[in-house]
Image (cartoon, rainbow over all chains, first blue to last red; front, side):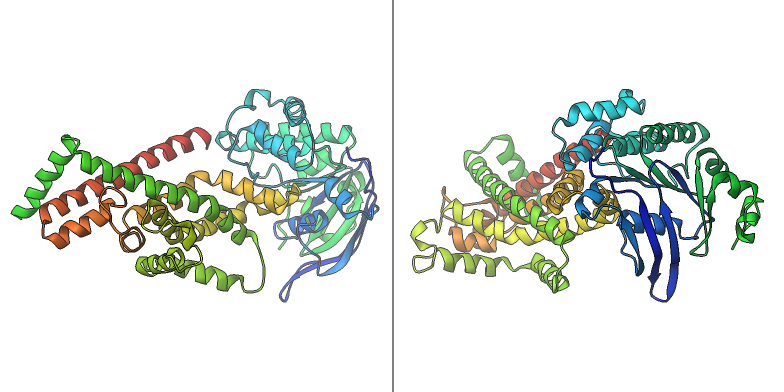
Length: 238
Length: 234
């Protein structure tokens, strides 16, 4: 893990507009070190956009993302992201992990890659072309690739959206293992069950607005907003 | 009709008898076009990848010019290379006019825009898929280019083959800078032009058949290698 810590994170008035359309509007919250934060909400709520804004893939049109470390390079290197659809390079699973390590400036990439694959239970896939692996296996390789970088903060954008229960379980176990190792988790999902299993804290988004920000226990037991209560009851929000 | 069947018979005879003149001309054609394609690809593939990822004012104009240059008239390229390499030209002291080297330069210039423009399109399409992942990994521009070129290597084979097809089938430029000297700079295409002008149509057609067979064989082989490798690597 990078020596220069970047947490806590203070997000103030974060917004993103595409033309006249507001995709995210004035989100304000903090992220503390070591927490598992689930960004919950229906499709189109602005969850993925918020994750991309935090990770630096998009530039906010308003507000700010304030990491505690002012060094932009340190901030970039202390994060990793796993996308909904994993992008595998056209090479073996091991070489995919090695590529990430090489880019990060790690010297002995082979050992570090094998360690990451082993932790994720993927050594049997190490030499297999990554693009020929199943969707669940590719997502686990993507997670191993992120794990290898030992990020302080891991972003996951609906990593199990198209996976079966077994693959979902494997991903969730790996996420929990990373969390136990000290990584702060910020993950989007629209799956209530997954949010219940993984969340220490829930950020509930609807129509681009942060409707509720609460510890997971109180969010599920006593939601304070009508939208969150309706979502938890399984009602359709639009 | 009789002329066509006669030329086909002659083509078969030339190939089966391993005619030494034919082999020499075919060998030189392959050598000149092969080296021209190699040289052009070494420059055009990175240039195409750079142009795919770069963002600067006037980029669309550069892309439009590059795409337009895919249809460069060979005789104009030949003329420009001739002027550069002629005794009075800036590269005249090299003394390579009317040599295979001059033909390689002309062909490389002719196919550079083809390979670069096709590579730009392939890499730009791939960039749409890879961008977030590579940016997320903090890959530099050069690292992104290398990764994309490697990952798109099978698709880029088609761009290189298109360049090869253009090079080996080209006659105008190599005629001007090579001079069609028997045993020195005579290629398949210039030999066909010569035999046609001499009125020896069966021989010209036979050479044409051999040329087409060579091009198709090389393309088939490359296609087989590409599809086999894609199945293996995904």
